[in-house]
Image (cartoon, rainbow, N blue to C red; front, side, top):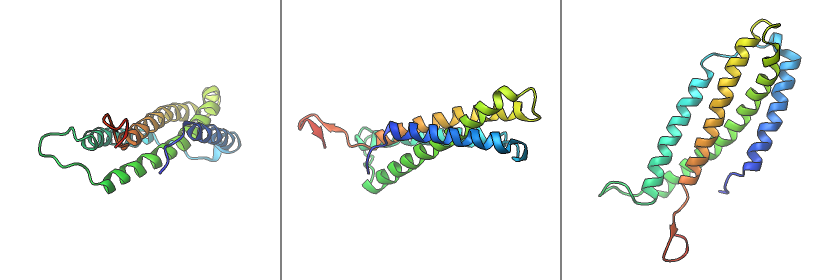
Length: 154
């Protein structure tokens, strides 16, 4: 599995931000209100991935408590796949929420529900940004540490 490229994530954010903006511009009045608890699930996933990153990093580097076994390579591969999927999905959602935020923020006073949607979109966008960061941290934790004796990855 290849490392997630920052340019790919930025491209997803920009593309889906444009899509979110166009969606809001053409159909905001017919869309349902954004759920107020949308950011909560993203924050919980972010916390879980940061916790996983800590455990994976320690166990891959064999720095955990005495007697603890290292992680099975398949567990590390699954964590890396979760990180890759989370960073991609987080970037897509970040783009959509950012596009909605950019459209609703200046229209908060004139449109019914736009102010509330702007708040939810802003909080959700921040939560998505945190999720992408946590996913990148988890992906980095899945790397094999460098072996100082060999001057390369073990």
